[in-house]
Length: 262
Length: 280
Image (tube, rainbow over all chains, first blue to last red; front, side, top):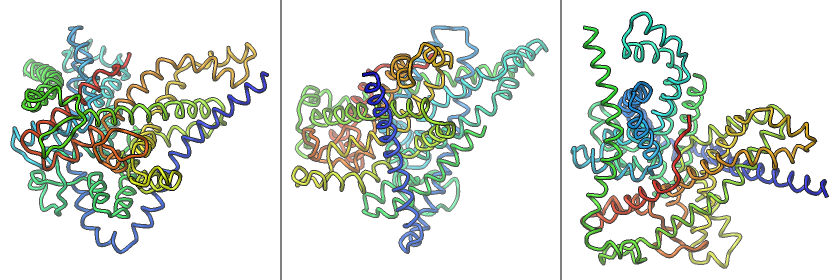
């Protein structure tokens, strides 16, 4: 009887592990197989300028979004740590966890309304970057807060004892101690933005003209690699989409490795 | 001089905290304002009618709402046990290199774009469904609820598995040792001792997964056929988030307002689910 129980429990565990391995293996191997086969083909070579433009757009949009979201997140995390108003702190935490559950399509709608039409940026990389900044704000605040909490508290107290003001001690000393964690938060936020599709589809549009200058490109519509992938599927170019998928896989794993190495 | 710096820094801190508050309230308020024209005209029909014909001025989301909820619930119900069992099996019963490998694989896969899952679903899962159930999929060619559920589950698996794995890591070794010392077999330890202590984190991760599944637009769009119809496993259908992405490009007037109202419904749905607040 007992042996029977152990047997079916073991079978259950094996089945779960097999299901997960099968699912993830399917995703990984299928993308690699078809993507690598597609990368060398003539159609992929013809689409190279498009890939290049999309890669530039991805880098530009990610950079601009991080430029907005990381300082904001750092400020909010520092405020969370240092404020004495408990109710406000709890309210902010609740607000952040509500924001982190909002679907990305809803962020896209809001970004389109607020940055696209109210501010008048239209479909542009800048609209997309601002929306992406909003999208990554909640996880970035949580990660930076975690990094600040884990950083050695004794440096903070020593700074205070040496006569630094509260603000100086937070921004000058505690942030320096928490720097690896903040960097890894930035890399994770970047990988999230690189993987985003619905929100950016609604805000930065699907343009794929080659960039001429950084500033002028920011005000034009441009697809990132992920949006480009979706767009090529809609156009029936499955092979191209898989090639973009391999590029994205490389990009995202690079960012994740950087984040883990910190 | 340094007093000025202190003030500036303090103001910056307050400003960024205020920006987070502002983001949530502006988001909800602005969506509501944009959805208002339609809600004022036909709020009841919007929620309870299944008739979505923008050209005729009919905006009923009931079918899409059911389809969204059904696909998301089934996907979570499929992916959560699988991820949980896999995490338990690898963390508790596998020799050393496997757990580290499992963790880094899951981390890497969780960062992949969800569209990629949709793409793989389109090229692998949809044809497979068509092959397995030829009679049922005569009209849809395999696209439909089942394909959407499988793709969503595929998308949720790495995140869920990583979450359960971390939860297992945080259980102290004394618990396992105590259970083994009482004479429990390895599988007994897993099922009678570790599984019950994971209860809280199961709820947390399943809630987060459900939220992600409800809000997923592009991956589902690629495999579910995109016809507004009552949900079923084998016929083409469409979800709420998918409709927003699909129709936003050309919508105007009341139609556009209806799409913002869909956004509002999604926002309400995801915020009504149990909160994912982290305990520290």
